[in-house]
Length: 509
Image (cartoon, rainbow, N blue to C red; front, side, top):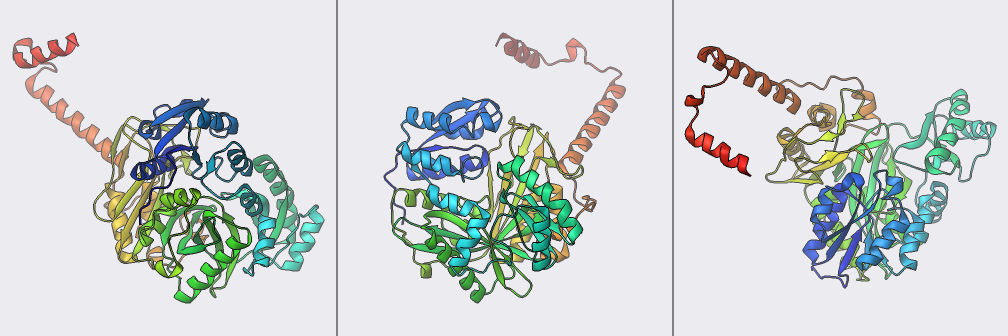
């Protein structure tokens, strides 16, 4: 079923690949789009693809993409009916969701209240426990002093995880394995939480050794119906940041999927959730699962669920926001095949993964059966220092995990981005690793196994290496040609008159 919802124009409050992704879904649905852009994004692909585009401020996100008033003003000027936040920036900002509703715009996401309840980790833990969703042993209140933190950690049992209540993206959390480490880390994390999130609330929970990070995608409408769309395996992380995601999970069983999916639905229904959301869990070695957090937005890794279910999550978000009842029953959702996503960043894996801004001078994107590339790139685009260095999401799909991995390797080898460094060599190393290929990994696998590991692989040349070889070969060719002819430049009578005529014509223009 492919109904067009009664929304005619949507403003996308984002940039880069996710803005492009939403614009393309809207175009297929016959919906007009409005892009917003900062100084740095004047030439962005999302600006080129949208039906309208409006400038909203200087390059820093705090002066543009995070300016609620600027975005709402554009929504009024352009007569947009709805606002799609994507992920990042204002996507999980309860004030933004509330202001959209107050000023008459449809917010393509959950209510401000649901964002508030699930955005705070202490509150969401309490709600999960009330919904009979397993939670990690720990405290469900703010810890005020270092002495109190040390006492609680001793009662829970080491190791423990000290976490900022409003944290996310790997920030504001540390593992403590002793009383001394708790006393050192607690004030540090509290300070970090204050500076990063504006809230210094910190809590402690039991640290699960070598867990898997598995999340459940849900869809919920305005009429009380909610379904889960299977799981995503997100355990391959570098310093708590997701690197590779896949669907399904290598450890999943039908019985575990059903229990985790039903737990995610219970949680969503307790908070009156609507639209797309993701409930994240940690799974231990005995396949016990524990609630981690809920992301009240579209996830970066949503394409792997789309590939295995055939459900377009962006279109689903729009249809739900427009008030349509869910057109899916749980029995209708039967994931098939295997999908893997690699997050391609403009960063240098040989230099501690520091961001590598610059101009893309050449680009060859992979294609072929079972390959999808979500990005906002083109030749000549300037990758700036102002935003997250994610430039592409490369996705493979195949009947089996082994075939999906081999297809990803083929696509990675085809992907050539000239002018900037990327983490593609890092992925080539990962997909050659026998433990990863066997599905034997956990959330600390990359930090444990790939720290300070050379990225060069036999028979795998980086694009930078190929460029250097091409320059050297070209220099040798012209050097030989010069010495064979005895002159570096041909005499005028040696030049074709047709070529001279072409040059004169070019000069006139």
